[in-house]
Length: 319
Image 1: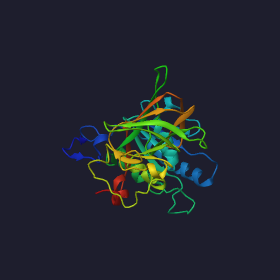
Image 2 (image 1 turned 45 degrees about the vertical axis):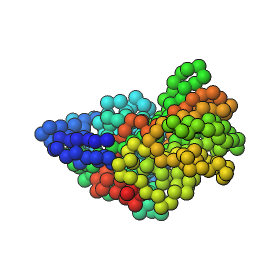
Image 3 (image 1 turned 90 degrees about the horizontal axis):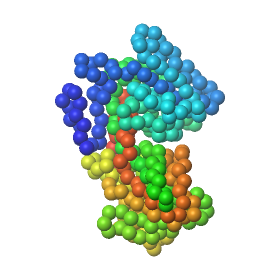
Image 4 (image 1 turned 180 degrees about the vertical axis):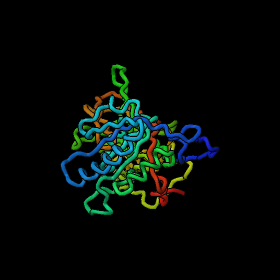
């Protein structure tokens, strides 16, 4: 995958551009409409962070034509994201990954860690959060001047075809997708197909799919891939798969137990009730006979960072 920006810089996967996606010819900012989504749990640390963000945005909006709206995560709706140039997510990684489900491939996302772990052991690690309250003012200036780093991130997406032929597209996942029996104490039964050679029936605790960047959230705690590295040219179009708790004698090296692949995975459900869970958030249910296709072809997410690319944070996973 290749992206070309206006200053004749070509970036090969993994993709990041500096400035190009936020500026028009002549250097003017194209950010006009901003939505701020914040975590609201009545903890003082988050309220203080929101106050800092609001004060800075109010100051800038007095001398510009910026349209700025605010919404708590629990109240925001899909329609709030339409025609936004920038979504600022104030919270932690969980807030950002859940909110990102509503963001399309045309909108920039800026994560602001409202409770950084580097300042409090009980705070958020903030892997996807490019900014924090202390740096928000200068980082916002970078966004509006077109100097932020735009990381173009792939997302997983599952499509369910029901027994009646209806198609249901699940929310795109930045980290991971779980497909399993809704009753976790019962086995997940399905037929697994991928490519031309893999076709088998399995009983497991469900299938976990992860993007390259999302593997640290859950996947590496399920599959033992410590020490594994991945080719830089594959991390934008491949994903990870593992069948959870598969019987040990069935853990083959043919891609049926775990795999790093660009091929679409197909599951044919033999479960009375099953679900697809995107990033541990929204559930989409299906029944026996449903066909679920999983690929890395979800809408890309344009995530802003400022002092390094998102991939610099996991350089030890890349070869």
